[in-house]
Length: 495
Ligand code: FAD
Ligand code: SF4
Image (cartoon, rainbow, N blue to C red; front, side, top):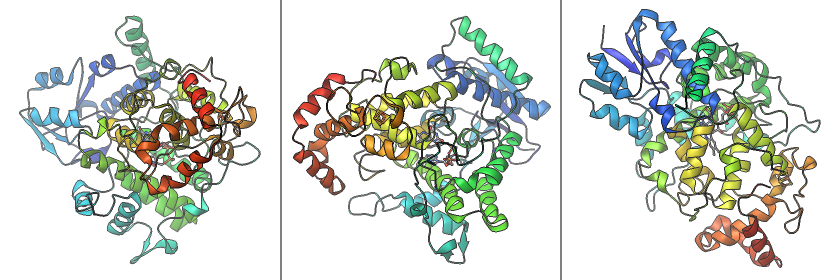
């Protein structure tokens, strides 16, 4: 047999081992939770997944529950191998340890070499941009996914124009509720430990505790995937961007948390989605949309985390320096009247998860408009979302959502007024603010905030061609001065 394989807590599936009989080291480090204040359900998920894996492996695993990783490694005293871990600090740590062989990373559809070949010469002055769509095409061709020979299935790579519909008018989810796991005695133990650590003042959490909502084993993950493919995927495409108060799941797959724990190989996820199209005739716009998220966006974000370097996280192109407000940090909705913010923050408190559009167009949009420091926002989201890891949060927040990289990931900031939220959700109907108003008591914080934002960042974005039209609109606003003064006064106070 080869060396014992050290599997980090986000490398828990069989694809991180070379053969099914390989011996394994698993480490549960309490220091991780002491350092930062995580969502209670995120801590539960990680511990439960690790402990389930240890139980599954039985005698084949050495499972050490220690303060730090270093303590665990000192106790092991045998050579180890590890698949390259998923963050800069963890990679530094394993590379610096004697007796640890570091292998190529696993857990993504495309490998690092393939990405490097594709990215060479791109993103530099005069070179092509590092566009997700281009990367996704190359990945589809390379891995022969949804292809008919050299041509994409259905004649094009992207069916997004068939998607992005507003939510159903009756306010009901377009898909049945997802399959949810049942807790077992390992969850009971985890809950008791977390309660005790918190009582002893050893760690602090944010967010509500609640029944575990996300898979912690490969078996549970495959159950969720099957349920999604059979009952929910067909509605995924059209309503991908819609939001409904009271229907947080809509037709989303809820697979990010188990995929990021490494419980299932995303190549298997993509393969099964393609089979759902070919064998069961599921609509191509939904299947392609889902495949694009998994092998397009997820892989692209992963590779960019490394490609853009360790200092990328410090970008702050729009000069945003406000703190994360206390109501956001504490997930406290008591003083929030803005129905969208209150709904999304409440969902996050209760589940540690909201889908892509609340992240980007409510929370991210809010932070962008109010000038919250991108790195502080990244840290807050990292601790608060059950599926968050450094590699995925940094490019998504710093790049995609906060435009703090000056436009490497997205050509223009994802800032929008209340009209977008009004079109894509049912929040505004029940809100005390009016999405059409930018001035006065009932001025929508997003609509007013949008103009306040444009006014603040105009000097930086002046040369951006995609911003020419919005900035021209800014010049025509007669009441701009009053709106800017009003928004400065409101700051990041709860709405
Ligand atoms: P679905 O909507 O069903 O999509 C399928 C899968 O596609 C997801 O499970 C995920 O693995 C992948 N995916 C789609 N978009 C992205 C993306 N931009 N980056 C990486 N993977 C993607 N995703 C995370 O996994 N962890 C994060 O910490 C995270 N933080 C985000 C922060 C912001 C500000 C934004 C805008 C997006 C973030 N995302 C993150 C991406 C996306 O919002 C989540 O992957 C998705 O909402 C998870 O729910 P789901 O599994 O139901 O996804
Ligand atoms: Fe949100 Fe504005 Fe709509 Fe209220 S009116 S729900 S604050 S977008």
